[in-house]
Image (cartoon, rainbow, N blue to C red; front, side):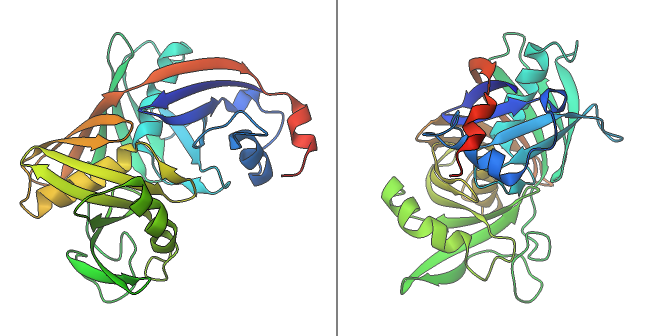
Length: 281
């Protein structure tokens, strides 16, 4: 099984083309491939390109636990560069279909920076989804371990819970992330961001990704957190998101259509041996 591995600010993905698979890619194989001791190791798998009726390319995104993700900003930037690196397109601008919506990608000529039109951010509880009456989920409270946390919820094609924090840290993300991800309030589970607004143009976040755990960087999480800051009037329309892995730039129009720009780095290409699947992990 041939693969390529990239990272976007430390958020690493393995890219596999469907024509390099002998069969399907079941959950147990995904978990083994993503395992950092028994497999190649990654924060997820990008499977594509597939034929799409609405876009130039189709993409499936898998978390390390084998579940399928609707959308990934870092994953989309990586996949866009992969399409250029593997000469599957002659254009630096193209569209990609994901379960979380269609996006437009623009790969910089040096391929090290990619811009993605992420789509429209929504705070509608029915779309995210969040249980309870129909509403925009803004400045609500959730009790975790007897501690009240103030949060907003958003979707950019996948669900996000943004927690306001005085000092976001890996400790806080790991302490509360899994509990919030799996809280009954979120029927499809949720990604979690711990947010601090630095000034009108900068925010800082720590991230707990649904199905992946603590993560150094995330494009969709950056988009959701920045959208909250903009929606609440805490930031202007152009925002730099600071994460442990680095920075992503976001911009929004008045309809909350989001444009994300960030780096991509190629790590390696290789072949996954069938032998790794002989051990049940």
